[in-house]
Amino acid sequence: MASSHPRFHYGWVVIIVGTLVVFGSLGLARFSYTVMLPVMQESLAMDNTQAGALATANLVGYLALSVIGGALAARYGPRLIISVALALAGVGMLLTGLANGFLSAAVCRAVVGVGSGASNVPMMGLLSAWFAPRRRGFASGIVVAGSSVALIFLGTLVPRILYVYGENGWRMCWFIFGGVTLLLAIGGFIFLRNRPAEKGLKPFGADTEDIASSSRSKGLEWGLVYRSPAVWHVGLVYVAFGFSYIIYMTFFAKHLMAEGGYSQQAAGGLFMAMGWFSLVCGLIWGTVSDMIGRKGALIIVYLIHTVSFTMFALWPAPVGFTISAILFGLSAWSIPAIMAAICGDVLGPRLAPAGMGFMTLFFGIGQAIGPSVAGAMADAAGSFTLPLLLAGGVAFLGAFGSLFLGQASLKS
Figure (cartoon, helix red, strand yellow):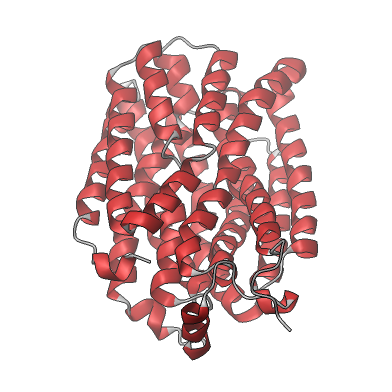
């Protein structure tokens, strides 16, 4: 007989593996570029527009497969899709280390993006199957901390590798990160499971009402995803996060070095500090969203981002940079955690991966546009002040858009 309250629920294994999947699919695959950008840009003779376009290539790949990856996971099971896609991201990172120019690097980064989108989105959607509605924000909040662990790891390791290997250090970084991601893909296939029933369990935190509701849920009615007004509204709000945060993250180290006179090591140190502060942000805000509702949590987080990005632009001094990094760290990955919980709330556990994929389409559009726009603006203006102010303004629009979300449909 299935046990609803085992001493150790396998959902915790899913959380641990999910955190490692996010560590590889987002942390290593995307955010490592931030710390390596100054050296990589010089080695490949790229201007700021090309540097932004390289980030855009990665994010276009992410966008292309995020929707399809979520749908494939809903049909064939998240375990298989997550593992195969994460392996593809690892291969793409290995190939990035062999790039000899902007074009080849852009192609490789796009491949990494494809693997990232098709692994991260189903992983976040999988949590809805393993955790009851009142626990989804909590679970999502823990898993997104994989990105925080990566920031800590990258801020410490990348400057050291760059110092030891000199101009080829960024290539060695991609080789190492690609190998680690391939190992994580193997671990995901071994340990992940598509649903609690495979382990003779019920979702963690489920009570009789949750189980009855789940038993009444219908099959894969794809129209529920694309016809839901709540999903469309939340998706449009999600654009603001994708556009604004990726500008901040992509050019974080570059701005510190160009405007603040930071060394590579000092920029990496602040990047690592931001990672430490962000370690529990998803857990905090995911839990807050469980308590006060998704709408209220989104508004608060977007306003924090507005202040952080604006301060980074207008206070180009160590104090301003540090406060900005702390504010962003304390709220960094909370929006994806809340969005994952919303998908489970609105669509149920089986359609949650597809819903997350569809909402990530909006998020990905913002991400894909942001770096190229910011890079071109920086080349034209001679600094990153205007692009960062733009990021702050768009984050404020995210808060404003969240005001009109239907609270009843977004509260667990």
